[in-house]
Amino acid sequence: MDAGVEEDVRTSLSHLESSLGNVEQHLAALFQTPLCDFAEHASPLENAKLWTALAYALDTLFYSNVLFCAHLNSSIMLDDC
Image (tube, rainbow, N blue to C red; front, side, top):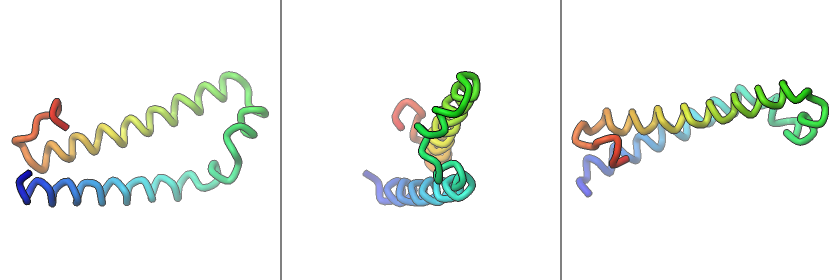
């Protein structure tokens, strides 16, 4: 692996870790209550919204990191990430 690409990957992972830390800070109130406790008191619609939002957030973070990696080195195709 090219040293430049390896450094870009390390930088990308560092940015991802920082982004996840920021998300965790914003969601601290949610993390204080176990999801199973929240689910017991929430309506089925609220549960569906919660799980959909969490899945969407994780998918968005992952895909944005893939795009960031591809942007750093234009020779990397999205299929290769």
